[in-house]
Image: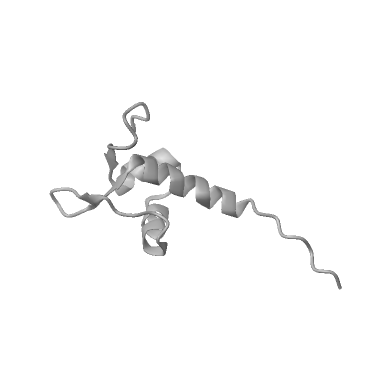
Length: 76
């Protein structure tokens, strides 16, 4: 389980930890990175990407806000 009480500015999460915290699938975190929504903060000893916890939370928030956008219907 991911510790959300830690310092979110300095805590680094793996893809799996980030996905768990954001309640999304790991592939979603990878897509955020690919699309530029989430910036990689480093790598672990095995070369896997690490992300700052606060960046993950902000990426999740931005994605959910974008999904809730409502566009007015075009007048015909």
